[in-house]
Length: 494
Image 1: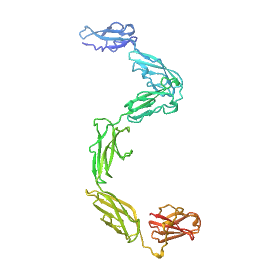
Image 2: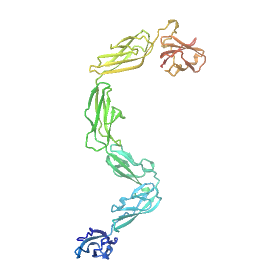
Image 3: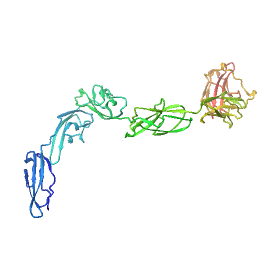
């Protein structure tokens, strides 16, 4: 062999483990010499701190003895130190011991210590040894011991770990009577109140101390403050169209380079609950209004700046009415519209007929409830439809011989006449005034046609099932000789 690979330099410490310099080298190595070497083994505790050169002698391929050099550096003993002792209140939870040992990188061991954390809740009141060890390998290690004094504490909770947005309201740290006599300290803490905007984004540990508990730190609480996302923007801030039109609206971030997971919330003016969530929404124009939008991250933190889009509804707006809510077949009914931005009308009267007049006069020739619709058209070809369900009731003509005369409203007292339910489907319960015992109940149409009579023999609830169950408005009349009649309206809706 022409050249012997003896390896690089070796770092060790005074008092470290002996080092075998020959190891797995083959028999061609004749010897290794140097200060601190005996029988091919270097003993760090036999030499002072310093740098030493080892000489390897071996036989090369020509049968000659050759030499190769190697360096060993002997350092001083490993320095390690800990605090002499710390006091921890019981129920504190896990205590991170990392800040109590020097230099960094060591390992803590002892009772109730796991991965460098001491569990004060599991430990009883008393004193425990925590050993901090630095091990650089090759036997270069050293340890120091710290005492942990666990003292009694009547505080059951210091608060749960908390996640907050940077623009959230402040957090009261002394939230219970147990904590009131102590003090909190740490980033963002002022007078025992945590201000997320003062601390800024990050994860912060705040500490609770209380002289009465004789603890260095009585308890801690972790608070994570999340930054808000960039402002949301959109391509256009003004949209116009007909009422009912659906338009696509897209939001994005003003800072396109921001690396954050966000969504977008959309609000009607004056509301705090979003009507839609998403980057792209299909918005149905309902009226002229402002809609607001904002960016929100996965933690629920909203951007500081909310913006809005102006929605302009170009279509007609309005309503309609009728001069009576019930009429006899063939009786004149007058419909009236009230609208703006309208140049055409289309009425549907619920019986298959229609009108294109603004305020039509109509005659019904079919009985029962009728649903009426009005569609209005604007000059820019927008339309708007209003539909009134069961808007008008049409009834048959009444034979004068089959009617009951109803007193005027001025003579009617209906407070003591109870109908339940009202409206109903033709089945109901009623109770009349006590003065009407021995009287008669008449059920009539609005036109005065007598439909059914019931004797009211005593003051009690009476269940009634109408023989005719046609939807409409009816009159109920309690009458008794010598007494003023009692009258009330009832609605049947099938």
